[in-house]
Amino acid sequence: MFIISAKLTKRTLILGGAILAVALAVFFSTKAVSKDSGPIPGETDQQRVAYLASLGWAASPTPSETLEFTLPSPLGDTYDRYNQLQKDQGFDLTAYAGRQVKRFTYPVSNHPDIHQGVQADLYVCDGAVIGGDILCTGPDSFVATLEYPK
Image (cartoon, rainbow, N blue to C red; front, side, top):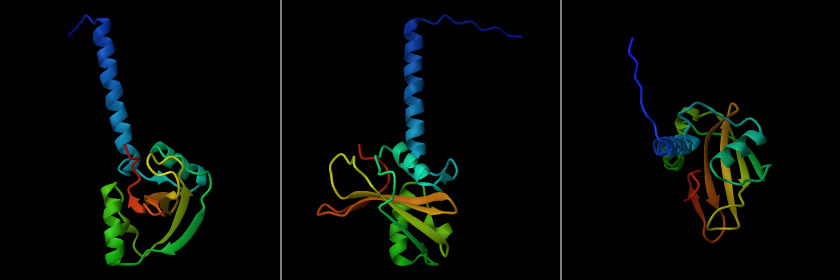
């Protein structure tokens, strides 16, 4: 049996705690968008809004629009370009080609640069979020990943 002892000072404990806190913050911020940790629950408005909140977005508690459609199989050029945006954030729509998907659109009120016309779209299949985007419909229109701008 081995016994190891160490003398820890307050400074060492505080520094170690700070390093651990930063490591945890980085870990959870990168996992928020990626689906690598498993399916993201998206069956209910509450789950979808909670997911958006975990990414930093303040979304309306109910969607302004819900649309159900079938993803084409194969996806085709338009969806292939859009799917690249999804792949950039850890999703991939290819596995859902030919399947029924629901799009939930939520108004977003806390974009740091644009104060009107910003919305979050979440795509759900079989109760799980399979993709999404943030878009602006006004004169400054754009489509971006779900990552909150820093």
